[in-house]
Length: 303
Image (cartoon, rainbow, N blue to C red; front, side, top):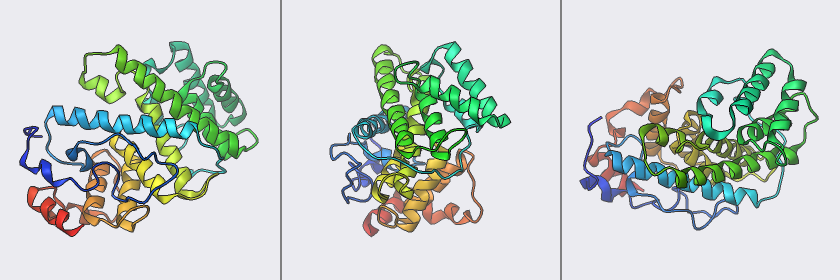
Protein backbone atom coordinates (compact mmCIF):
# COMPACT_ATOMS: atom_id res chain seq x y z
CA UNK A 1 0.00 0.00 0.00
CA UNK A 2 1.34 3.38 -0.97
CA UNK A 3 1.94 5.66 2.00
CA UNK A 4 0.40 9.11 1.83
CA UNK A 5 1.05 12.31 3.66
CA UNK A 6 -0.62 12.94 7.01
CA UNK A 7 -1.98 16.11 5.44
CA UNK A 8 -3.72 14.23 2.65
CA UNK A 9 -6.25 16.44 0.81
CA UNK A 10 -8.91 13.85 1.63
CA UNK A 11 -8.50 14.36 5.37
CA UNK A 12 -11.17 17.05 5.57
CA UNK A 13 -14.04 14.96 4.23
CA UNK A 14 -14.66 12.84 7.31
CA UNK A 15 -15.96 15.52 9.67
CA UNK A 16 -19.33 13.82 10.06
CA UNK A 17 -19.30 11.20 12.81
CA UNK A 18 -15.90 12.24 14.07
CA UNK A 19 -16.60 11.99 17.78
CA UNK A 20 -19.15 9.18 17.77
CA UNK A 21 -20.37 6.60 15.34
CA UNK A 22 -22.80 7.56 12.58
CA UNK A 23 -25.79 7.61 14.91
CA UNK A 24 -26.03 10.43 17.42
CA UNK A 25 -28.80 8.70 19.37
CA UNK A 26 -27.72 8.50 23.03
CA UNK A 27 -27.24 5.20 24.84
CA UNK A 28 -26.80 4.66 28.56
CA UNK A 29 -24.12 2.11 27.68
CA UNK A 30 -22.02 4.53 25.64
CA UNK A 31 -20.18 7.36 27.46
CA UNK A 32 -20.93 10.85 26.18
CA UNK A 33 -17.26 11.83 26.41
CA UNK A 34 -15.68 9.11 24.27
CA UNK A 35 -12.16 10.03 23.11
CA UNK A 36 -12.20 11.90 19.78
CA UNK A 37 -10.98 10.19 16.62
CA UNK A 38 -8.74 11.47 13.84
CA UNK A 39 -10.91 12.14 10.79
CA UNK A 40 -9.24 9.37 8.77
CA UNK A 41 -9.83 6.80 11.52
CA UNK A 42 -13.51 6.50 10.63
CA UNK A 43 -13.11 4.97 7.16
CA UNK A 44 -11.43 1.57 6.64
CA UNK A 45 -9.37 0.98 3.51
CA UNK A 46 -7.93 4.45 3.03
CA UNK A 47 -4.31 4.86 2.08
CA UNK A 48 -2.73 6.36 5.16
CA UNK A 49 0.75 7.01 6.47
CA UNK A 50 2.15 4.93 9.33
CA UNK A 51 1.74 7.93 11.64
CA UNK A 52 -1.96 8.28 10.85
CA UNK A 53 -2.50 4.53 11.19
CA UNK A 54 -0.82 4.53 14.59
CA UNK A 55 -2.82 7.56 15.74
CA UNK A 56 -6.06 5.92 14.61
CA UNK A 57 -5.25 2.63 16.36
CA UNK A 58 -4.44 4.44 19.59
CA UNK A 59 -7.67 6.45 19.37
CA UNK A 60 -9.80 3.33 18.92
CA UNK A 61 -7.99 1.58 21.73
CA UNK A 62 -8.66 4.58 23.97
CA UNK A 63 -12.34 4.22 23.05
CA UNK A 64 -12.25 0.55 23.99
CA UNK A 65 -10.75 1.45 27.36
CA UNK A 66 -13.49 4.07 27.90
CA UNK A 67 -16.21 1.54 27.05
CA UNK A 68 -14.63 -1.06 29.32
CA UNK A 69 -14.53 1.40 32.20
CA UNK A 70 -18.19 2.24 31.60
CA UNK A 71 -19.15 -1.42 31.54
CA UNK A 72 -17.54 -2.25 34.87
CA UNK A 73 -19.91 0.24 36.51
CA UNK A 74 -22.99 -1.28 34.83
CA UNK A 75 -25.44 -3.82 36.17
CA UNK A 76 -27.26 -6.62 34.41
CA UNK A 77 -26.89 -10.19 33.17
CA UNK A 78 -26.84 -12.09 29.94
CA UNK A 79 -28.66 -15.36 29.25
CA UNK A 80 -27.13 -16.63 26.04
CA UNK A 81 -24.72 -15.81 23.23
CA UNK A 82 -24.80 -16.33 19.49
CA UNK A 83 -22.98 -19.64 19.49
CA UNK A 84 -20.88 -18.54 16.53
CA UNK A 85 -17.67 -18.42 18.58
CA UNK A 86 -16.41 -21.62 20.15
CA UNK A 87 -13.97 -21.58 23.05
CA UNK A 88 -11.81 -23.88 20.97
CA UNK A 89 -11.69 -21.40 18.09
CA UNK A 90 -8.06 -20.92 17.14
CA UNK A 91 -8.45 -17.15 16.87
CA UNK A 92 -8.49 -16.95 20.67
CA UNK A 93 -4.93 -18.19 20.77
CA UNK A 94 -3.94 -15.73 18.04
CA UNK A 95 -5.52 -12.79 19.83
CA UNK A 96 -4.13 -13.55 23.26
CA UNK A 97 -1.19 -11.34 24.18
CA UNK A 98 1.75 -13.40 25.50
CA UNK A 99 2.41 -10.95 28.32
CA UNK A 100 -1.18 -10.97 29.59
CA UNK A 101 -0.35 -13.82 32.01
CA UNK A 102 2.50 -15.94 33.30
CA UNK A 103 3.73 -18.86 31.16
CA UNK A 104 2.10 -21.28 33.63
CA UNK A 105 -1.19 -19.43 33.40
CA UNK A 106 -1.02 -19.44 29.61
CA UNK A 107 -0.40 -23.18 29.62
CA UNK A 108 -3.35 -23.78 31.94
CA UNK A 109 -5.67 -21.74 29.72
CA UNK A 110 -4.58 -23.75 26.70
CA UNK A 111 -5.16 -26.98 28.61
CA UNK A 112 -8.68 -25.83 29.49
CA UNK A 113 -9.35 -24.91 25.85
CA UNK A 114 -8.13 -28.35 24.76
CA UNK A 115 -10.41 -30.02 27.32
CA UNK A 116 -13.35 -28.03 26.02
CA UNK A 117 -12.58 -29.09 22.48
CA UNK A 118 -12.48 -32.73 23.57
CA UNK A 119 -15.89 -32.39 25.21
CA UNK A 120 -14.87 -32.30 28.88
CA UNK A 121 -16.92 -29.19 29.62
CA UNK A 122 -17.07 -29.66 33.39
CA UNK A 123 -13.31 -29.73 33.89
CA UNK A 124 -12.55 -27.07 31.29
CA UNK A 125 -15.06 -24.68 32.83
CA UNK A 126 -13.76 -25.42 36.32
CA UNK A 127 -10.29 -24.44 35.14
CA UNK A 128 -11.57 -21.30 33.45
CA UNK A 129 -13.31 -20.37 36.69
CA UNK A 130 -10.17 -20.81 38.78
CA UNK A 131 -8.09 -18.74 36.37
CA UNK A 132 -10.82 -16.08 36.15
CA UNK A 133 -11.25 -15.70 39.92
CA UNK A 134 -10.78 -11.97 40.67
CA UNK A 135 -9.37 -12.95 44.05
CA UNK A 136 -6.98 -15.41 42.44
CA UNK A 137 -5.27 -15.35 39.04
CA UNK A 138 -7.68 -12.67 37.78
CA UNK A 139 -6.79 -13.53 34.18
CA UNK A 140 -8.65 -11.45 31.59
CA UNK A 141 -8.87 -14.12 28.88
CA UNK A 142 -10.07 -16.73 31.37
CA UNK A 143 -12.75 -14.26 32.47
CA UNK A 144 -14.03 -13.98 28.90
CA UNK A 145 -14.07 -17.77 28.48
CA UNK A 146 -15.67 -18.39 31.86
CA UNK A 147 -18.27 -15.76 31.02
CA UNK A 148 -19.08 -17.61 27.79
CA UNK A 149 -19.29 -20.91 29.67
CA UNK A 150 -21.75 -19.37 32.10
CA UNK A 151 -23.84 -18.02 29.23
CA UNK A 152 -23.97 -21.36 27.47
CA UNK A 153 -24.17 -23.52 30.56
CA UNK A 154 -21.06 -25.40 29.41
CA UNK A 155 -20.44 -27.89 32.22
CA UNK A 156 -22.00 -25.56 34.76
CA UNK A 157 -25.37 -24.15 35.71
CA UNK A 158 -26.09 -21.20 33.45
CA UNK A 159 -25.93 -17.92 35.36
CA UNK A 160 -26.74 -14.84 33.26
CA UNK A 161 -25.79 -12.29 35.91
CA UNK A 162 -22.42 -13.91 36.58
CA UNK A 163 -21.78 -14.29 32.86
CA UNK A 164 -22.02 -10.63 32.00
CA UNK A 165 -20.19 -9.70 35.21
CA UNK A 166 -17.20 -11.73 34.07
CA UNK A 167 -17.30 -10.23 30.58
CA UNK A 168 -17.32 -6.75 32.08
CA UNK A 169 -14.53 -7.72 34.45
CA UNK A 170 -12.48 -9.01 31.53
CA UNK A 171 -12.94 -5.77 29.63
CA UNK A 172 -12.00 -3.67 32.63
CA UNK A 173 -8.96 -5.74 33.57
CA UNK A 174 -7.73 -5.78 29.97
CA UNK A 175 -8.04 -2.01 29.86
CA UNK A 176 -5.91 -1.71 33.00
CA UNK A 177 -3.25 -4.02 31.56
CA UNK A 178 -3.20 -2.04 28.32
CA UNK A 179 -2.76 1.28 30.10
CA UNK A 180 0.07 -0.11 32.22
CA UNK A 181 1.75 -1.61 29.16
CA UNK A 182 1.60 1.71 27.33
CA UNK A 183 3.23 3.48 30.24
CA UNK A 184 6.00 0.88 30.37
CA UNK A 185 6.68 0.82 26.62
CA UNK A 186 7.93 3.99 24.99
CA UNK A 187 9.08 2.46 21.70
CA UNK A 188 6.21 1.64 19.33
CA UNK A 189 6.88 -1.23 16.93
CA UNK A 190 4.62 -2.96 14.36
CA UNK A 191 4.26 -5.91 16.75
CA UNK A 192 3.48 -3.77 19.78
CA UNK A 193 0.76 -2.02 17.78
CA UNK A 194 -0.79 -5.39 16.88
CA UNK A 195 -0.67 -6.77 20.41
CA UNK A 196 -1.35 -3.58 22.31
CA UNK A 197 2.20 -2.80 23.47
CA UNK A 198 2.56 -6.27 24.91
CA UNK A 199 -0.56 -5.83 27.02
CA UNK A 200 -4.00 -7.37 26.58
CA UNK A 201 -5.36 -5.93 23.35
CA UNK A 202 -6.74 -9.32 22.24
CA UNK A 203 -8.62 -9.84 25.49
CA UNK A 204 -9.96 -6.28 25.42
CA UNK A 205 -11.12 -6.66 21.83
CA UNK A 206 -12.81 -10.00 22.49
CA UNK A 207 -14.58 -8.72 25.60
CA UNK A 208 -15.86 -5.64 23.75
CA UNK A 209 -17.11 -7.85 20.91
CA UNK A 210 -18.97 -10.17 23.28
CA UNK A 211 -20.56 -7.24 25.10
CA UNK A 212 -21.71 -5.94 21.72
CA UNK A 213 -23.51 -9.26 21.19
CA UNK A 214 -25.26 -8.76 24.53
CA UNK A 215 -26.61 -5.38 23.47
CA UNK A 216 -27.62 -6.55 20.02
CA UNK A 217 -29.60 -9.59 21.15
CA UNK A 218 -30.73 -8.39 24.56
CA UNK A 219 -28.89 -11.14 26.42
CA UNK A 220 -29.18 -10.15 30.05
CA UNK A 221 -29.75 -6.48 29.22
CA UNK A 222 -32.35 -4.55 27.27
CA UNK A 223 -31.60 -4.55 23.56
CA UNK A 224 -29.55 -1.50 22.65
CA UNK A 225 -28.77 -1.33 18.94
CA UNK A 226 -26.84 1.94 19.32
CA UNK A 227 -24.49 0.47 21.91
CA UNK A 228 -24.12 -2.75 19.92
CA UNK A 229 -23.03 -0.83 16.82
CA UNK A 230 -20.58 1.29 18.80
CA UNK A 231 -19.02 -1.74 20.50
CA UNK A 232 -18.85 -3.71 17.25
CA UNK A 233 -17.23 -0.74 15.52
CA UNK A 234 -14.63 -0.41 18.25
CA UNK A 235 -13.76 -4.11 18.12
CA UNK A 236 -13.64 -3.96 14.32
CA UNK A 237 -11.10 -1.15 14.32
CA UNK A 238 -9.05 -3.12 16.86
CA UNK A 239 -8.82 -5.93 14.32
CA UNK A 240 -11.69 -8.35 15.03
CA UNK A 241 -12.93 -9.77 11.67
CA UNK A 242 -16.29 -10.92 13.10
CA UNK A 243 -16.90 -7.41 14.41
CA UNK A 244 -16.11 -6.01 10.96
CA UNK A 245 -18.91 -8.11 9.50
CA UNK A 246 -21.31 -7.01 12.23
CA UNK A 247 -20.58 -3.32 11.63
CA UNK A 248 -21.22 -3.88 7.93
CA UNK A 249 -24.55 -5.47 8.79
CA UNK A 250 -25.48 -2.61 11.15
CA UNK A 251 -24.74 -0.01 8.47
CA UNK A 252 -26.49 -1.97 5.74
CA UNK A 253 -29.68 -2.50 7.77
CA UNK A 254 -29.65 0.70 9.84
CA UNK A 255 -29.35 -1.13 13.14
CA UNK A 256 -28.28 1.43 15.72
CA UNK A 257 -27.36 3.96 13.06
CA UNK A 258 -28.49 5.53 9.81
CA UNK A 259 -28.36 3.19 6.81
CA UNK A 260 -25.12 3.75 4.94
CA UNK A 261 -24.38 1.30 2.12
CA UNK A 262 -21.13 3.03 1.18
CA UNK A 263 -19.69 2.64 4.69
CA UNK A 264 -21.12 -0.87 4.97
CA UNK A 265 -19.08 -1.80 1.90
CA UNK A 266 -15.92 -0.47 3.55
CA UNK A 267 -16.37 -2.71 6.60
CA UNK A 268 -17.32 -5.75 4.52
CA UNK A 269 -14.19 -5.15 2.46
CA UNK A 270 -12.11 -4.92 5.61
CA UNK A 271 -13.58 -8.21 6.83
CA UNK A 272 -12.79 -9.98 3.55
CA UNK A 273 -9.23 -8.72 3.64
CA UNK A 274 -9.00 -10.14 7.17
CA UNK A 275 -10.19 -13.55 5.95
CA UNK A 276 -13.92 -13.28 6.69
CA UNK A 277 -15.81 -13.63 3.44
CA UNK A 278 -19.58 -13.94 3.08
CA UNK A 279 -21.58 -15.28 0.17
CA UNK A 280 -23.40 -12.72 -1.95
CA UNK A 281 -21.17 -9.76 -1.12
CA UNK A 282 -19.61 -9.16 -4.54
CA UNK A 283 -21.42 -5.80 -4.68
CA UNK A 284 -18.98 -4.33 -2.15
CA UNK A 285 -16.22 -4.27 -4.78
CA UNK A 286 -18.05 -2.05 -7.24
CA UNK A 287 -16.05 1.03 -8.21
CA UNK A 288 -18.62 3.37 -6.71
CA UNK A 289 -17.72 1.99 -3.27
CA UNK A 290 -13.97 2.51 -3.68
CA UNK A 291 -12.79 4.92 -0.94
CA UNK A 292 -11.50 7.48 -3.44
CA UNK A 293 -11.63 11.20 -2.82
CA UNK A 294 -14.37 11.61 -5.44
CA UNK A 295 -16.53 8.83 -3.98
CA UNK A 296 -16.01 10.12 -0.46
CA UNK A 297 -17.10 13.61 -1.50
CA UNK A 298 -20.28 12.15 -3.01
CA UNK A 299 -20.85 10.15 0.14
CA UNK A 300 -20.38 13.20 2.34
CA UNK A 301 -23.02 15.12 0.39
CA UNK A 302 -25.49 12.25 0.67
CA UNK A 303 -25.39 11.85 4.46
